[in-house]
Image (cartoon, one colour):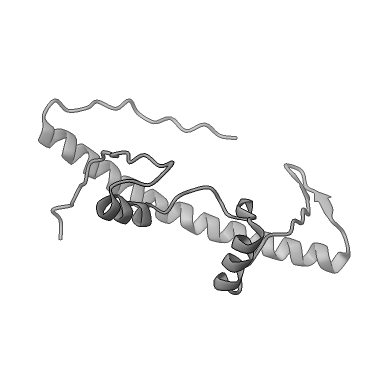
Length: 135
Protein backbone atom coordinates (compact mmCIF):
# COMPACT_ATOMS: atom_id res chain seq x y z
CA UNK A 1 0.00 0.00 0.00
CA UNK A 2 1.31 3.45 -0.87
CA UNK A 3 2.14 5.87 1.91
CA UNK A 4 0.86 9.41 1.88
CA UNK A 5 2.91 12.20 3.37
CA UNK A 6 1.05 15.03 5.04
CA UNK A 7 3.02 18.20 5.59
CA UNK A 8 3.50 19.19 9.22
CA UNK A 9 0.80 21.42 10.61
CA UNK A 10 1.86 24.85 11.78
CA UNK A 11 -0.90 26.13 14.03
CA UNK A 12 -1.38 29.92 13.99
CA UNK A 13 -1.02 31.83 17.24
CA UNK A 14 -4.25 33.87 17.04
CA UNK A 15 -7.82 32.69 17.57
CA UNK A 16 -8.83 34.07 14.16
CA UNK A 17 -5.87 32.33 12.51
CA UNK A 18 -6.79 29.01 14.09
CA UNK A 19 -10.44 29.40 13.02
CA UNK A 20 -9.44 30.23 9.45
CA UNK A 21 -6.95 27.36 9.32
CA UNK A 22 -9.61 24.95 10.55
CA UNK A 23 -12.05 26.21 7.90
CA UNK A 24 -9.46 25.71 5.17
CA UNK A 25 -8.85 22.14 6.39
CA UNK A 26 -12.61 21.45 6.47
CA UNK A 27 -12.88 22.63 2.85
CA UNK A 28 -9.91 20.45 1.83
CA UNK A 29 -11.51 17.49 3.59
CA UNK A 30 -14.83 18.10 1.78
CA UNK A 31 -13.04 18.03 -1.59
CA UNK A 32 -11.19 14.86 -0.63
CA UNK A 33 -14.49 13.32 0.57
CA UNK A 34 -15.99 13.76 -2.91
CA UNK A 35 -13.15 11.61 -4.26
CA UNK A 36 -13.54 9.05 -1.45
CA UNK A 37 -17.32 8.85 -2.01
CA UNK A 38 -16.75 8.23 -5.72
CA UNK A 39 -14.26 5.47 -4.98
CA UNK A 40 -16.65 3.94 -2.41
CA UNK A 41 -19.40 3.85 -5.04
CA UNK A 42 -17.04 2.11 -7.48
CA UNK A 43 -16.02 -0.41 -4.80
CA UNK A 44 -19.70 -1.25 -4.15
CA UNK A 45 -20.32 -1.63 -7.87
CA UNK A 46 -17.37 -4.02 -8.30
CA UNK A 47 -18.39 -5.97 -5.17
CA UNK A 48 -21.98 -6.36 -6.41
CA UNK A 49 -20.74 -7.59 -9.80
CA UNK A 50 -18.26 -9.94 -8.09
CA UNK A 51 -20.89 -11.42 -5.75
CA UNK A 52 -23.31 -11.89 -8.66
CA UNK A 53 -20.64 -13.68 -10.70
CA UNK A 54 -19.61 -15.86 -7.75
CA UNK A 55 -23.28 -16.80 -7.15
CA UNK A 56 -23.71 -17.58 -10.85
CA UNK A 57 -20.60 -19.75 -10.85
CA UNK A 58 -21.53 -21.41 -7.54
CA UNK A 59 -18.35 -20.49 -5.69
CA UNK A 60 -17.82 -18.87 -2.30
CA UNK A 61 -14.16 -17.90 -2.63
CA UNK A 62 -11.65 -16.71 -5.16
CA UNK A 63 -8.40 -14.92 -5.61
CA UNK A 64 -6.52 -12.48 -7.76
CA UNK A 65 -2.89 -11.35 -7.84
CA UNK A 66 -3.29 -8.89 -4.95
CA UNK A 67 -6.17 -10.16 -2.80
CA UNK A 68 -8.50 -13.04 -2.03
CA UNK A 69 -12.22 -13.07 -1.27
CA UNK A 70 -14.67 -15.33 0.50
CA UNK A 71 -18.42 -14.99 0.92
CA UNK A 72 -19.58 -14.62 4.51
CA UNK A 73 -23.24 -14.80 5.46
CA UNK A 74 -24.82 -13.80 8.76
CA UNK A 75 -28.39 -13.38 9.92
CA UNK A 76 -29.30 -9.84 10.96
CA UNK A 77 -32.64 -8.55 12.26
CA UNK A 78 -34.95 -6.25 10.33
CA UNK A 79 -37.80 -4.93 12.47
CA UNK A 80 -41.08 -4.76 10.56
CA UNK A 81 -43.31 -3.75 13.50
CA UNK A 82 -41.63 -1.88 16.35
CA UNK A 83 -44.73 -1.95 18.57
CA UNK A 84 -44.93 -5.75 18.38
CA UNK A 85 -41.20 -6.09 18.90
CA UNK A 86 -41.27 -3.88 22.02
CA UNK A 87 -44.27 -5.79 23.42
CA UNK A 88 -42.39 -9.06 22.92
CA UNK A 89 -39.24 -7.72 24.60
CA UNK A 90 -41.24 -6.38 27.55
CA UNK A 91 -43.33 -9.56 27.99
CA UNK A 92 -40.30 -11.86 27.84
CA UNK A 93 -38.04 -9.38 29.70
CA UNK A 94 -35.46 -9.95 26.95
CA UNK A 95 -33.93 -6.48 26.93
CA UNK A 96 -30.71 -7.95 25.55
CA UNK A 97 -32.41 -7.76 22.14
CA UNK A 98 -31.78 -4.02 22.16
CA UNK A 99 -28.46 -2.19 21.79
CA UNK A 100 -27.26 -0.64 25.03
CA UNK A 101 -27.29 3.07 24.32
CA UNK A 102 -29.72 5.52 25.86
CA UNK A 103 -31.55 7.99 23.66
CA UNK A 104 -29.86 11.37 24.07
CA UNK A 105 -33.02 13.37 23.32
CA UNK A 106 -35.25 11.20 25.51
CA UNK A 107 -32.88 11.33 28.47
CA UNK A 108 -32.28 15.05 28.04
CA UNK A 109 -36.05 15.62 28.16
CA UNK A 110 -36.37 13.59 31.38
CA UNK A 111 -33.41 15.36 32.98
CA UNK A 112 -35.16 18.67 32.27
CA UNK A 113 -38.62 17.56 33.44
CA UNK A 114 -37.88 15.01 36.19
CA UNK A 115 -34.38 16.06 37.25
CA UNK A 116 -32.89 12.59 37.28
CA UNK A 117 -33.13 9.10 35.84
CA UNK A 118 -32.24 6.10 38.04
CA UNK A 119 -28.95 4.55 36.91
CA UNK A 120 -28.10 7.41 34.53
CA UNK A 121 -25.85 10.40 35.15
CA UNK A 122 -25.99 13.54 33.02
CA UNK A 123 -22.70 14.49 31.35
CA UNK A 124 -22.04 17.87 29.76
CA UNK A 125 -20.22 17.31 26.48
CA UNK A 126 -18.33 20.34 25.19
CA UNK A 127 -17.54 21.01 21.56
CA UNK A 128 -16.80 23.92 19.29
CA UNK A 129 -19.52 25.06 16.88
CA UNK A 130 -18.23 26.56 13.61
CA UNK A 131 -20.08 28.50 10.90
CA UNK A 132 -18.57 29.43 7.56
CA UNK A 133 -18.71 33.07 6.54
CA UNK A 134 -18.69 32.16 2.85
CA UNK A 135 -22.00 32.24 1.06
